[in-house]
Image (tube, rainbow, N blue to C red; front, side, top):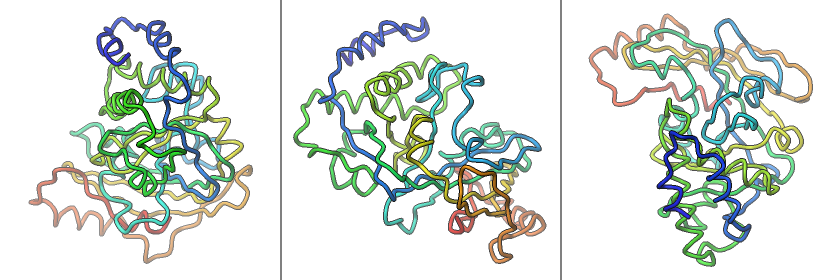
Length: 306
């Protein structure tokens, strides 16, 4: 099965062949787990110009009307909610640079290396209220119950009880899900169509390795139906992301603690001790002029407040 998928010419969009291959899979060949009540998910959405978000629906998933391409777990007829599973308890370094970069990969300010400027980013924190059945995708080096448990993924069975076929196929899928951003949508055919396949088989989505965070932690792609019934919006915050010469700083702006996520919400300014301000941000950039960056740097206080 792996070789047949590897040998496909994805440029020709062999959707039917991929779907027929996946139809041979059986449930016992999946690493199955459930997000449990109380687990939390972290999500970041770069704001569109002159746009702010005031409702849960604006922070969940791309509207199907705007979902015309294949993405990591999206097909043109399936739009998914993406987020990052927060381990419980949180580790001290839980918001490291790689994980933040991974979550704002949709930002044009990040994508375009030559761009400088400022962009509003909306952070949101969600809590699971009912069980969400997912299929776990991971690399072989991540295949231990202890490692997965530490990252919020409690597999139903011991890893050693899975067949080698399942382990190999899961490892293969991990490469498909964890490939870096690709402008050619056909490169996402396998991961997107696998997600569609498991949803049709009754699961709520998938968990897969972070792309840019040295494969630390896991992201989830969950159906809108499960988000509406089993996941509650808990906290929303707005931050300004500043970029100068490949260096990035993020500053807290507003916060909203959500009691009723079916209603629209308003923002309050964050306490002064959590806000730097544009003048000090510019001074920080000036001090960093001679400091060469391998990757963007972020003001960690942003995440501690959420």
